[in-house]
Image 1: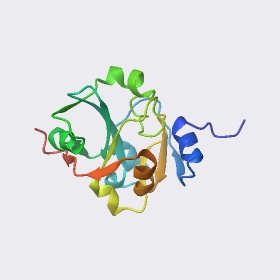
Image 2: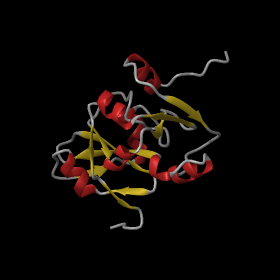
Image 3: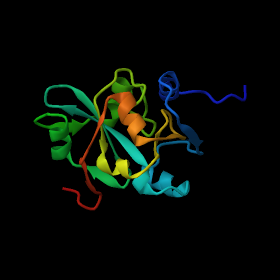
Image 4: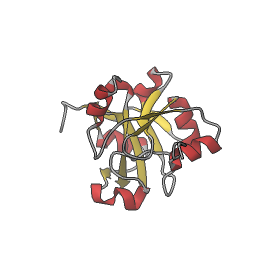
Length: 164
């Protein structure tokens, strides 16, 4: 039983022959992405969080941004051709995605939603995203993530200090 239990995200990446590394950490409950990155000795710039939003038309979208940034709702809306988007309530994350807060990833959700990754990810050969459960991260190429999800890169975030 010493085998690592795979998440839907890992199974999806395996099926699509996408190279990734798994990183686990001790975590009983949700903690901020910035705290996690710093505890693991990672740069918050290359540790991304997945945010799910609902558009004015009723469609859902996944936005990946560095953990120390805030989603720019206007730019995010424009990136997916919506008039506006709003983050889904935390209580609805599992129902919509199949994942829990702190373990949400754009890979292997109940249904594949359009994915937009902040353009800064292109600066790194690999970056860290949630692995599909709390305490698990995946390290993979941003280009591979965009390829396997049919996603794209766009300017969709603000420094966290520019809360509006």
